[in-house]
Length: 198
Image (cartoon, rainbow, N blue to C red; front, side, top):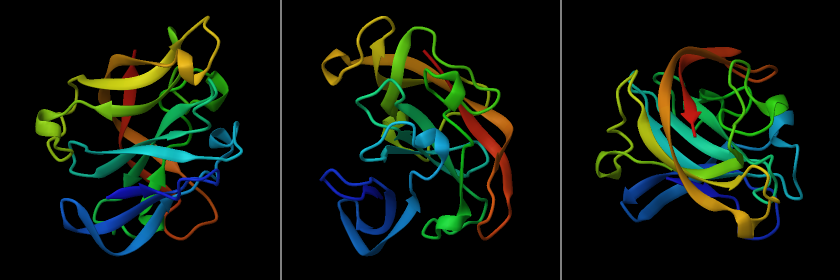
């Protein structure tokens, strides 16, 4: 289970907790992501990581795709956390973060090799459309699968009242390295990532 840090105007982090049942957490919660990268701190007050969506890639690795930057701004975007193979989901340093937005509308914050949107601004707060809603029944490599996300049409003033649901697709993108520095564990992790399409 992934939860946010609170319901007031404070920094929003992503947490995970063990589940005793489909509706009840047991024990402590563990932080797995905080908005510390420059590309997820373009718009803040507060800075946020929110809207986590779990999905399992074709190698069986767990991903948490989430939204970064303020949802009140066109800088809102979707990024990824990938759990290393054999990793402990409650240990923050077993998670590797994408090196930029994977779905966003500003080239400066996009991960290298990923392109900004053409038709919408600030895509985020998404969901994957999966068989029976099962995150472990993720689609195979190479096949696009449906998504839904909030965004504002390009050319329209960005505001919550102008946000609408859009449909799109995503595909697993193999052999993608996420890198980090000055933290425990390996500085790189290579595996599947996600590419999103409007």
